[in-house]
Amino acid sequence: MRSVTYSMSVSLDGYIVGPDGDFNWSAPDEGVFRFWIDEIREVGVHLLGRRLYETMLYWETADQDPSLDDSMLEWAALWKPLPKVVFSTTLSAVRGCARLASGALAEEIERLRAEPGEGDIAIGGATLAAEAAASGLIDEYRVMVYPVLVGGGIPFFPRHERRVDLELVETRTFSSGVVYLRHRVAR
Image (cartoon, rainbow, N blue to C red; front, side, top):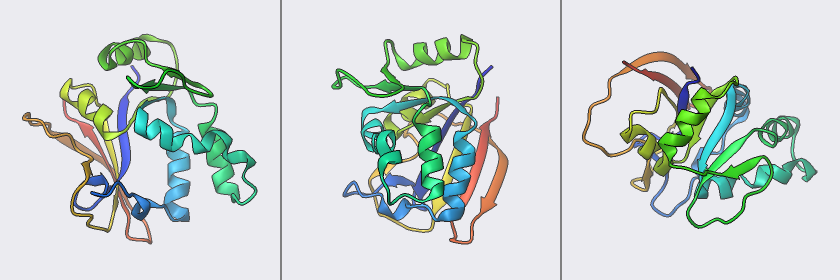
């Protein structure tokens, strides 16, 4: 069965964006960016909320940007054809290899798990991940922790009142001080 993973960059105090909506502190150095390239290779489909979808739209045409280096072009080449499912109540259309979700998140994940296919089902966006976590649908949490305190904003981890035990699967420290943590939900 395909695993559902939630993976994003996060500040040391637990936020994916600061109180002003800024996330420029999470710009990856070359080592972290190469790691993200390797990670996206393991994804078979990416589930996104509207805000993250709109942020990632840049990569749909990034290959036309002459200022990009080879690693960014490689990322764009992997991201662009990746199937994406967008959850939004305000968008009427999406572009590229994306489609609007036709059902609830749990139904969509169940359908994707039942389909033949390889690669993880990745979730991007804290709001969407919180809904998946509340329903016990996340199998792994993959956190790229940046050495910065932003003091508030949108939290990586959903606020709910149930305990979730995790097993450490992998850690990696980058020269920039960024630490990657991969935890599997203990079942």
